[in-house]
Image (cartoon, rainbow, N blue to C red; front, side, top):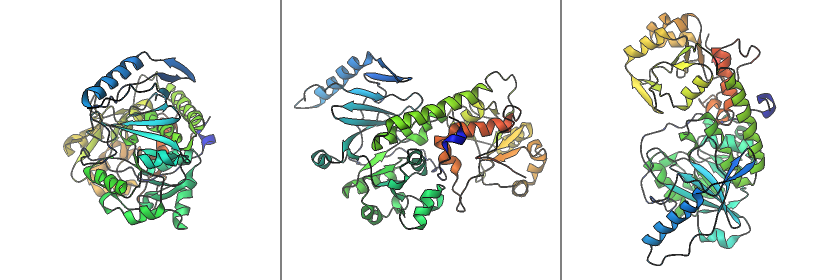
Length: 429
């Protein structure tokens, strides 16, 4: 499936990530002894199921820890069937336990270690199960609040945008359908973290609030929502460094709509096209040097080699100057060192909010001497953005990494994709 056939789904600016571990008394938090890295019984491989012998060890270990920590040990857990083991994502998997699907989400915020949430997906008519625990989520979903615009992209890809009743930060939403619903009053802005309007969320009566956990504030928000009887599901898609790993979270969202088959077909098409585009650059002997970003509050941050952006650029046949090996973090470099990188770069990408070269030069006259500026080889991922500053690169681009990859290949190696028209990037003039 080509990217033209798949449509473009929208979202807005990615939330700023802080290096804080969520703390608090969230009743939905998983156990420290949870075995987050384990894969159980069955694994998907091109539509075939492969038995995993580690299941026996997993059950024994889980039962041992449970037995040793409880006064009245329960019976051994029933056998579970793994419905989906991600190929690229690292922090979720889907199982079936009896009649119910279970979504396991591991370490969904920065700094989390051995933390797991187990969300049991229960048919809406099973009122007894739903009343038993806030970890039991009614499916298929009918009313959803999204605290990250990336979640909108997954929902749009599944054709379920009509279920969205609330978002955090309406100005950052790019999706035209959702923006129209916001304008009509059908989708409400619920606010941000400690500034969240709990009254608005309660009024919306959502089946679930899809959240991301990046700070202690978010944990307290979840606590408050739980106290109002509102279910919260944490997703850690923003922590994935693999472009296909981010996109694969469509499988996690799909489970809430009983659309796993549709999601798998969509994701397989995205992955196939991504690999086909990447194959164009696999044998390149020369990789253009890329300068990333621009000064921000007297600091210049450059993504590590394992970072999402650096991986995209590498797969597109480029090389990020100053990227730390084996690191996913963006690290600050001195302005002097950054200027040296810029003077050596063939291309300059993502110069903050700059929309033209005049703005870039006005921010620092020295930029006028940078070869990429003089040769008009400066590109920003800002072609699709909202008046308030939301960026579709961080929304629909999350589920369509193959299109971003083709954009980057077209920029760095225009001869490889001579007919490609940029979707997310624009050339600064």
